[in-house]
Structure formats: C-alpha cells, structure tokens
Length: 114
Image 1 (tube, rainbow, N blue to C red):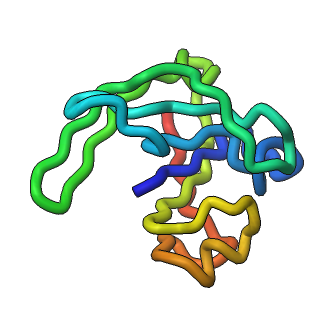
Image 2 (cartoon, rainbow, N blue to C red):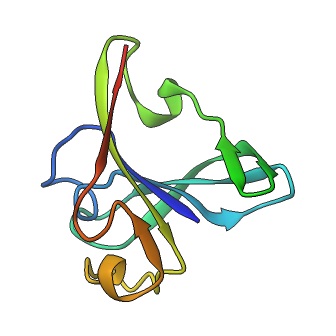
C-alpha cells in the first residue's frame, strides 16, 4: 500500500504533483521508507528516511514529522492518494488500470492541517 503526498499543492512539481511516496520499501517490521521525488515529472524517488509504522488487521498507521516533509508549523494543505498493487511504471494510467487507488484515477483526497 503506497501513500503519495503532494505537500506544496503544486502539480508542476514532483511526479504527477506528488512530492513524496511512503511505503515503497518496507525496511523492517516497524519501519518503512519515506522517499522524495528527485526528478520532476518522472517516477524517480530518493530515500529521505525510514519512518515508524504499525499494522493491525486492515489498518496501517504511519508516523512522520512535518520537518521530514519540509512543512512549516503553520496551516498547510496536503493532497494525497493511496495506491495498492500498481505496476509503478511511472504513468498515471497505473492508478486506473492496475491494482486499487483511493480516490480513483487522477483524483486526490485533501487534508488541511492547522
């Protein structure tokens, strides 16, 4: 299960606007990867850190700081998408054709953090 984050709400940066991806590489039973897009408009990621996670049943909990995402302590808007079993080939159609995505297609969830 991958979590894509657009932390600057700028769709011209990152891959399809996503600046970070979480959980592409599980490093242990307690940690998973946080990666940042390293080539705008390309599916290329560089490791930022290992972050703690926990799973229980069908629930996944990830813990990361605003500092790791480069987010100031003030109010911020983050767009995000969950994706599972995509091919990771770098095309947006992966969200439609392969695996599951929430929300579907090119849509995103939006969170306002204060």
